[in-house]
Amino acid sequence: MTQSSPVQPQAEQQRLRDALGSFATGVTVVTTVTPEGQRIGLTANSFTSVSLEPPLVLWSLKKNSANLDAFRRATHFAVNVLTAGQKDLCFRFASKIDGDRFDGVPLEPSRFGLPLLSDSLARFECSTYHEVDAGDHVMFLGRVEDFCKGQGDALIFSGGRLLAPAPIAMAA
Image (cartoon, rainbow, N blue to C red; front, side):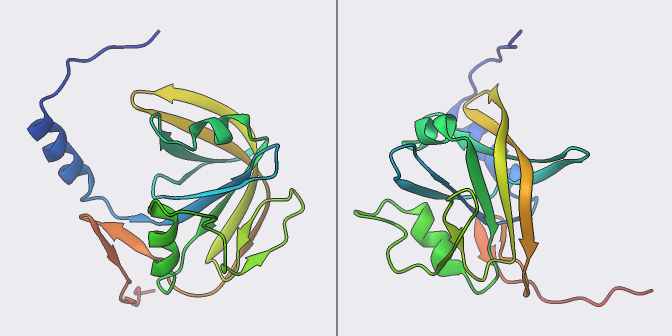
């Protein structure tokens, strides 16, 4: 059963968005390939781990996204966690550009045929496990089939800005 909620005025939605933006997140590029072979990629900061057994991750996409149908039809997708030095990829995959967003982007092979961004901080190749209708978004749960961890610091999104972290030594 779906709960309905009263429509919030635009100003209240913006206040909520600003408050939610107080929580810092990493930045990812989620990629897939359509059955026709078209590569799809988009920037997302809604990524999170869900379970270790089975290994599940989650990300969400707005229902009005032009890419929604491609991800709904996909059997697999990849989550590429961006490093602090990959701001250009964040903007490339977040913007509307003519042509193939992947042109000139260094890629690595995937056993599932997915475009994997080279030099990512981490990559998760996932089979589509489940999708959940959630308000104005669709949440995609993926079962992690393969992954790798690279080197560097994560690109961080907080307060509507991209940030490169300043390392802080933790006391033992």
